[in-house]
Length: 131
Length: 410
Image (cartoon, rainbow over all chains, first blue to last red):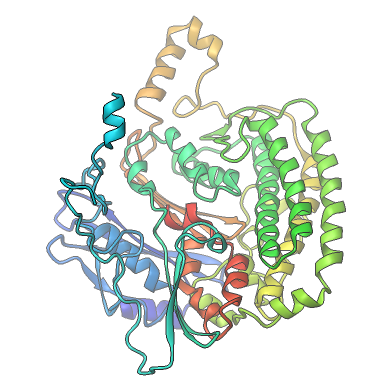
């Protein structure tokens, strides 16, 4: 992937790294589809690169060495799908928080599951008396 | 602490952003996430040498509402109110970009009137968004009069859009295959009056600000970025154009009716805060120019396509014939049937490239909706504009980037 992106950038002038995300296909032998989007401001065309990875080893090449913008977007993709990016050593949570369990955009993460950072407070006494 | 209530153990929410710098004369300060100058909720951790910012780490996510997860649980139509709440300063552009994506997946071509109306409303929204951004960033520098002038115009526009859509900010006006309703009588007449009002007030702001010593001192050569750097960090929209390249999706890969319009793409010179202010002001003038052309060429005709897969039947038919009743029922319960496939659609939003990556597995509910939001990408590179400047410049630079929490954190 890194070699391909390097060629896209140097030979075909894809100078803008637009987006990286993943698509979850539960049950498929290669469960996650990591989707990259590039744009060339010279030729004004887009290209979409997809690669499939296994659930047990969701690792793809990081593009931070080629595009600075990849850093933040790879952090988001790691947050949401647990995809690891080889070569990006700053995969701190960005939209979620430190200590969040699981990856919410995976299809097997229940939508209603709550992980509050601060536990819910029991009802206050004054309210209880009124009730 | 009241007895009986267990003390919660809260893990430290943020790991250290920096490796130790090896200097013992610097101080690390935390700005935000809840601060009036952060335009929403964003946290900037800055290492300072006196008043000078050495390096920053920008952290977002405090407004994350699980937009993409929620999208996978609602029918294609029901997402429209959600996409409204991405960039809430120009909600219509989100609507139209999303509907465009779904329409392309379904192979629908919208009617001419809808095409021109969507273009007109996109430009109208762009003016609202730029007015908000410029007004807020001028106010942060103390220009209360300029702020009030600009939001006076913006409020007239909000009221005017409320007359069309029924809401001031979150319109939910786009529909797959058309629009919610046609424009009411007299709407275009009022639009022309508002554009004249816009010109009056914006001329006053130009007169007060453009050559004002205070603003030049605060904005010129502050937060500058080069074209190469801007592309490397994924900047699009006014920030990229302020560095001097006329890169605009409306011109480069025309969509809607932009190919038929006459407009310029304003660019800056240095890519600093002053250029970003000026590019936004010029873009609003171009939008006004486009709106006037669109009003002149607005065709008559229907606004919704005839397609039973996505467009709701007339209410009178729903009550009088069984086929339309079933059609209505299926659209509400199952959602529009979108064929299998994936698509990436990008529109030029006020902040830059707003992309929707939509995956359908062939049902009434999307398999995945991913938003490439300009604000989020800009937050990944904004430290390049903050580092090396003064602590007080963080406020002005951040204002000129126009980070919108709704689309940044989704």
